[in-house]
Length: 107
Image (cartoon, rainbow, N blue to C red; front, side, top):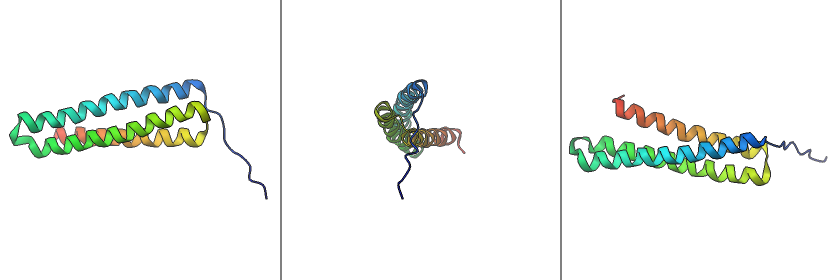
Protein backbone atom coordinates (compact mmCIF):
# COMPACT_ATOMS: atom_id res chain seq x y z
CA UNK A 1 0.00 0.00 0.00
CA UNK A 2 1.40 3.40 -0.97
CA UNK A 3 1.99 5.91 1.77
CA UNK A 4 0.28 9.26 1.31
CA UNK A 5 2.42 12.32 1.88
CA UNK A 6 0.59 14.46 4.43
CA UNK A 7 3.14 17.27 4.38
CA UNK A 8 1.50 20.68 4.20
CA UNK A 9 3.17 23.97 3.46
CA UNK A 10 3.56 26.47 6.26
CA UNK A 11 2.63 30.09 5.61
CA UNK A 12 5.57 32.44 5.09
CA UNK A 13 4.46 34.63 8.01
CA UNK A 14 4.58 31.60 10.33
CA UNK A 15 8.10 30.79 9.18
CA UNK A 16 9.15 34.40 9.78
CA UNK A 17 7.52 34.31 13.23
CA UNK A 18 9.38 31.09 14.08
CA UNK A 19 12.68 32.72 13.10
CA UNK A 20 11.90 35.85 15.12
CA UNK A 21 10.89 33.84 18.18
CA UNK A 22 14.05 31.74 17.95
CA UNK A 23 16.17 34.91 17.92
CA UNK A 24 14.28 36.30 20.92
CA UNK A 25 14.74 33.02 22.79
CA UNK A 26 18.48 33.04 22.08
CA UNK A 27 18.74 36.58 23.45
CA UNK A 28 16.71 35.72 26.55
CA UNK A 29 18.72 32.55 27.14
CA UNK A 30 21.98 34.51 27.05
CA UNK A 31 20.57 37.08 29.47
CA UNK A 32 19.38 34.41 31.91
CA UNK A 33 22.72 32.59 31.72
CA UNK A 34 24.62 35.85 32.31
CA UNK A 35 22.38 36.70 35.27
CA UNK A 36 23.18 33.33 36.85
CA UNK A 37 26.89 33.84 36.25
CA UNK A 38 26.73 37.34 37.72
CA UNK A 39 24.94 36.08 40.82
CA UNK A 40 27.67 33.50 41.36
CA UNK A 41 30.42 36.08 40.93
CA UNK A 42 29.06 39.07 42.83
CA UNK A 43 26.69 37.53 45.38
CA UNK A 44 28.48 34.76 47.30
CA UNK A 45 25.37 33.98 49.35
CA UNK A 46 23.42 33.26 46.14
CA UNK A 47 25.92 30.98 44.40
CA UNK A 48 23.70 27.90 44.33
CA UNK A 49 20.71 29.89 43.09
CA UNK A 50 22.96 31.54 40.49
CA UNK A 51 24.23 28.15 39.35
CA UNK A 52 20.67 26.88 38.84
CA UNK A 53 19.67 30.02 36.96
CA UNK A 54 22.75 29.67 34.75
CA UNK A 55 21.70 26.07 34.02
CA UNK A 56 18.21 27.23 33.04
CA UNK A 57 19.82 29.82 30.74
CA UNK A 58 21.93 27.10 29.14
CA UNK A 59 18.84 24.94 28.72
CA UNK A 60 17.03 27.85 27.10
CA UNK A 61 19.94 28.36 24.71
CA UNK A 62 20.00 24.69 23.77
CA UNK A 63 16.32 24.63 22.87
CA UNK A 64 16.45 28.07 21.25
CA UNK A 65 19.30 26.92 19.01
CA UNK A 66 17.30 23.85 17.99
CA UNK A 67 14.30 26.10 17.34
CA UNK A 68 16.44 28.39 15.17
CA UNK A 69 17.88 25.44 13.22
CA UNK A 70 14.39 24.08 12.63
CA UNK A 71 13.07 27.48 11.55
CA UNK A 72 15.90 27.63 8.98
CA UNK A 73 14.94 24.13 7.84
CA UNK A 74 11.36 25.38 7.43
CA UNK A 75 12.53 27.72 4.68
CA UNK A 76 13.58 24.67 2.67
CA UNK A 77 10.88 22.18 3.63
CA UNK A 78 7.85 24.17 4.81
CA UNK A 79 6.43 21.04 6.42
CA UNK A 80 4.08 20.79 9.36
CA UNK A 81 6.37 18.18 10.93
CA UNK A 82 9.34 20.57 11.04
CA UNK A 83 7.09 23.41 12.20
CA UNK A 84 5.76 21.22 15.02
CA UNK A 85 9.30 20.37 16.09
CA UNK A 86 10.22 24.07 16.13
CA UNK A 87 7.17 24.85 18.27
CA UNK A 88 8.06 22.03 20.68
CA UNK A 89 11.58 23.43 21.11
CA UNK A 90 10.09 26.88 21.67
CA UNK A 91 7.86 25.46 24.40
CA UNK A 92 10.83 23.74 26.08
CA UNK A 93 12.84 26.98 26.04
CA UNK A 94 9.89 28.88 27.49
CA UNK A 95 9.46 26.28 30.24
CA UNK A 96 13.13 26.69 31.21
CA UNK A 97 12.60 30.46 31.30
CA UNK A 98 9.62 30.03 33.62
CA UNK A 99 11.73 27.79 35.89
CA UNK A 100 14.44 30.48 36.04
CA UNK A 101 11.85 33.09 37.02
CA UNK A 102 10.45 30.80 39.72
CA UNK A 103 13.99 30.25 41.02
CA UNK A 104 14.48 34.01 41.26
CA UNK A 105 11.20 34.34 43.11
CA UNK A 106 12.27 31.66 45.56
CA UNK A 107 9.60 29.12 44.65
